[in-house]
Image 1: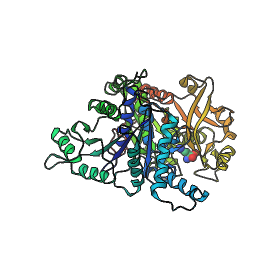
Image 2: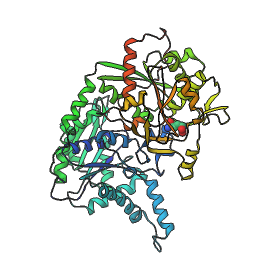
Image 3: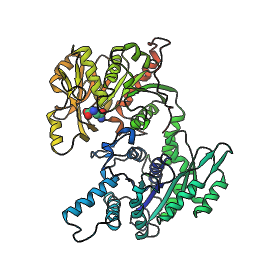
Image 4: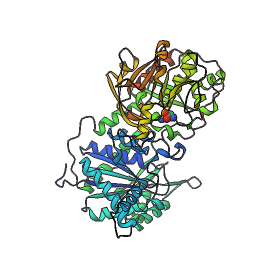
Length: 567
Ligand code: GLN
């Protein structure tokens, strides 16, 4: 601990007016900045919805479901926290009102509150405080940063805010810090920035008993001092604690911007914390050395992501970030073409050729349900035959296996039983192992499993290790009944469970790069440490872009209309 007082400090981050103003990135960035001053930090997200976790929500509702080592299905902000802090989080970092409500009801049924009327205050708020303090205690950190999902004023979030109000009252004066993140509105007609929405939001927060200590205002255009002065006056926050955060080129620039704005110094001062010796590699200088790489790239990797949820880029957030990390390690940037797999016809090779005309590699990411599978299998088949670098992530691995079976094993109706229960060649199926998981109350293989990498395979070479520890989120598996046939034809299981029963990585020999993992490697990629499988993929994409001029000219491009950039 870096101050005389060893009790953990709490930073509460709330959002105002609208969502998607960068609250999660601000939270992750502040965590990284505190680490740079030698403090130990962890992060927790409080999500106000009544689902127990986002596992059952559609990606269109919620974006990517981020899975932790211990198998919690969580909000995608946990991915930002893990990437910025280079820290593996656990289920304790993801609290939803659904979990809190379920726990209160469970206690009530057990008779814990016998005779009492169960109320939001104190029963719900007590449990929230227990979860927050419990994590601070268990992790032993100097600082716990708690981000509240949604925006101030949401009905669902009120109990969280009330718990925070109580904690601010109960903890020592320098024990907590409240940061409010809001947008400044730019009026084009008069070219003015408007502070009123922020003023209203702060008023709402104050009506809940929380006076913010710091206001961070996101803006698309530079804001001058008159704006910060106005916010300071109307919101009762000292001018030096009102910071504007201009929309950055990349999310990875945000820590440096906030450092320059003085957020780290102010936080240490308000919490009465003295900086300590910084862990090697964690200084702000290390971070900017890495982000500078993003601006000094020499090559471009043109990659297609072919999936069923491409309309919402957040659905594949970690995949996109993992590509950025691996490419940066090779001094390259990434140009992603988003392709809706549903629009593709498995049998229409010219259509698929046209869709992939402008890329040098393909990623087929995760997904659930039948929709889009055939288009993805078509893409995998095309990549197989045309020797285009291919990386399959979970469902993308399954579709690669199906494509290979149809093309090379003479099994034209090969399929996953997820799409066709009656298929004569269930190369992807529900296995007994999976049924055991279901019997234990789960419906999926979730979280970290150890993978044994087999000699003389590309995967083994890339990992430079005999074992890998990777995160899963799926029900279906490679059907071992077909394994020998696959291996004889050149698709080998380069990674398996330690007992050899489950295929974790499959790769095609005699192909520049065609690999699929049953797990989600993108969840373990870190900015300064690209994931081995992504590095292998990027290397072959770069090699491809230097040699190939394979595609027919003038082909129509099925590029999705979504703009590419940092989200
Ligand atoms: N739907 C497939 C399964 O459940 C793949 C899941 C995924 O891609 N995460 O096995």
